[in-house]
Structures are given as structure tokens and as C-alpha cells.
Length: 618
Image (cartoon, rainbow, N blue to C red; front, side, top):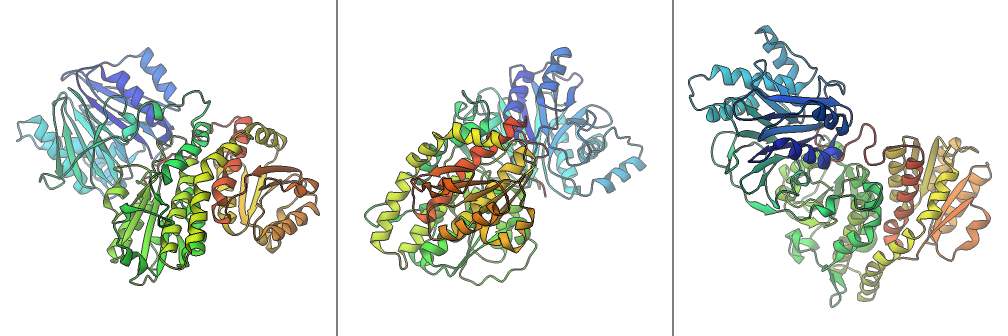
């Protein structure tokens, strides 16, 4: 959550910081602020609650100039979204400023100790406490004559005293053109430029200035000038790092001609799905290749159980993955919500393989689940989209999605890419066991047709918009599916509620008569995801149960199956596809339905209330 960008260079920092915040606003948009410094003059702080435009207007009225600065866009944790609680925060001298992502769990104890020493606080945040703590240590360390070393030492000693997570950037008037950063559990990168360097929580903030980045590890401390940077551990020893090339262009992170990032990313799915399977299908073996797993065929054949961990949309993709892997490979597979896995004590035998799924590769709960699995001696593989992310670096292997940047808070293309990855994994493991060459070849052919079939669904955009507008006054919606499309129903409900704020609930359609049917009424639409598959007739019965109680029904079914037009109020068609791949197609109209529904209700689909893209706090 939240976004950080810091700059040291030869240009005016303010426009660079504001542009970086625009690219990071999807990580938090409750408030934002900048602090800039020119030479050793007083730090100029400008901050405002609300959207980034409020800060832009404030800076236009009250300019701040300098060639060194830090900035932040906030997703509130401690304290409401107010001007006072916005970052950056200063120490009591006003000579030091910091921005911070994460949660300082012992901030109250630290605050009480500082207040006892006479410190006064202007905000409710844990971050201001950290600013005062760093400033206090800096002031006490007067024996150190070099202000740069003094600031690094103050940050190092302060973070040793805090419990929780942090990604911070700090600067002091005594040390012009010098920034210090530190991370633990909250991402932070160095953008390596020419005569300028950057600190940021995400490479998207700096991609228009440099394509070179260093991804910091937990407990790293970094300090940068315009000419150089140094990375150390919290204990002061040199830390290993490598300079990586950013895997997307500034243009890919822009909205283009679309009104919203979410719609752009829905329309990018033919390409993102193809990128996921490109180069990974082997016709000679009727199988798939996933070299990044770092496991030999013998090791893969020895796997007796698979555990899939994720949060939110990733957990729904994992649910689809459970059905797919068990169908194709006959390996017992189960899904664990990552936040639950880390606190449970599930029995895992020695031949259990764990996968963690995260678009950003920085989701804190998923990262903790990975480390818990590794702590217990299991091989843990990552399925992530962000190259260089923490999960990508710390996992024992895995596969990238190559979906390109996903800026919209509501995940779309990452879901279909994740499910595509599970299809490749299921095919690979299945062919090592009982799956025939004939079935393998058929599945390869089906996977290759997915991008074109998604294109066909996107051509129904206007029709789906009309259906969304028909139900615009609905205060809730049910989504129902069976087998492979039960996870699709869950994901469809999540999309609807997170961007339109209405009640939406996803269920296995057979569960309808076990309680859910009590919700059915003439004003509550039910969406049935029911392609012409092995459980189609069962879904028809469930739909008729709703219609018998005068509930309006939207059906998603296979092209050519016109019989539902007699019973459902509205029908959306998807191309025929192998049953195990149906979630990849069936979710597309659900994404469009929720998008148009939310837009018509005046909701900001790219920045839904109370949400942020990457959840890096617990």
C-alpha cells in the first residue's frame, strides 16, 4: 500500500515527484505530499488530503523548488485521511523529513517515551513517531562530524528500535542532495539514472527516467546522491545487489485512449494470455515447459500434494488452479488463503509442493506464507507478474506471467494469466503421469485458441454494457457457478463489490438451495456462469429455481446454446472451450459487466474507495 518516490539530481525535483506520484496513485490515494530541499535551506513541505490533484493545486499556489526531494501517496492505516496525517512528516526540529510505507507496531510505546522527553506531535500517524525518533538520534549523535554518516547512522539505529514493517526515505538539511532509504517487509527500489538517482516503492514511478533498477532486500539500508548509491545491511556491512532492467516501457504503464486503466487491462487480455503461454508449449511432447520451476522431472514426479496460497483475486485463481491440476494431473491440491496459512499449522508431508501467487510479488501475507513454507523445509515456488519482486527473488523457483503492468486496482488480466499458468502447470504434471498424448495435443490446441476467443467476447462489450445498465438500480447481485466456474463466480462477485460497492456474493450454484435462495427476490439479479459442460443440466435446474421465485437471471453460456433465451432474462455467450479452460473465458464478460455497472453508478473504478493495488501491510 502507499507509494514513495524520492529524487536527487540536477533537475527541479517537484515535477518529477508529482509525476512519480501520478504513476503510484493506484497504491494509495487518501492523501499525498512532497518535501523538497535546495542546498541546505529549510525543507519545504506541501501536503493535502484527497486525490493527487489537490496536492497539484496546492503546489501551483505555493511552489516548492529544489533538486532533492521525497514524496508519498497514502493509503491510511494510522489516523484519518487529513492534511496533518499526510506524509512527509518532520522531526521536531523541522530539519529532517521522512516518508514511510508499512506499519510501526510499537509506535504507541515509542510515542509515549518521546512525549515524556518533551516531543509534541501534530498527527495521529506512526510515521511521525519514526521521524521524531530518527531526529532525536541524529541530534544526540553530535560527535559524528559528517552529516551524511550521521543521518545513515540515525536511520539505522531508529529502525532497530521499531517493530513492524517499513519502506522509508529520509533527508536532512545538514546533508544536501543526499537521501537515505531502508526496507523491511515493504518494497523499495533504487532507480539508477544518469546524474540522478531515485528511491521508489515501485519501478513504475521511475520508468520514464530510467530502465535500470536495484530491488532492495529486507533489512537493507541505502543512501544515494546524484552520482552514486551504496547498499548496506542494517548492521553496516555491504549488501549484495544487482542492477536489473525494467521489463516494461513508460507507454505500457499509460492509459492510452481508454477512459480507465481497468478497461484497458480487460482489453489487453488476448495479449497477456498469449504472453503467458508463449514459448511454453511443446508440441513434440504434447506438454508444457516451465523451466523457472527449478525442479527436475524426477522431483516433479515425486510431488504427492500441492498447496496454493494467495489473497483476493489470486486466491480465486488458485481455486481454479485446484480444479485444473486435480483434473489434469490427479495430484491432491488445496487452496490456502495466505493470511490464514501463515498462522495455521497445517500438516504438510515431505512431498508437498507449495505455490504462492501474487501479481505484485510483494503481498505481505503471501510473502509471509512463502517464508513459513520454506521455514518448514518445503520447496515454495512463486507465480508472480512483477520481475524483481520480493517473492520472485526469495522463492525457490517459479514462473513469471509476463502480463505487463497492471495499474487498475481491480485485478483483471492477472487473473486470466494466473489461471492460464495453472493450465500449463496441470498439463506439465499430467503428462508426467497418466495424461495421454492425444489429450495433451488437444489441450495445446485449445490453449492456443484462447486469445482469439477472448477477442470474440470483447466484441460483445456494448451488449454487456446494455445488460449492466438494465440492472443499474440493483443493490446486490448473486454470482453462481459449478466445478471449474465456482471460482469464476467468486471472482465475479469480488469484481462487482470492490468497484461498485454493492452487495455481491459468489457461490457454488448447488449451494443455492442450502440457504442462498433465501436472498432471491424480484430486485436481486442472479448471474449464472453455465457453459455447456458436464454440469450444465444441474445449472439449468438451479436457474429455474430462481426463476420460479421471480428472480431476474443473467446467464453466461456457450455459443449456439440458445435454449436459455427462453428462461433467462439476459444471455451472454462465450466461445466453446475445453471445460478446464472455461474460467479464462467466462470471467471476461463478468469483468465488463462489473466495469460498466460501476461506471454508470459514478464510481471511480481505477481507485475504488478504501482499496489499494498492492497490500503490503498486515
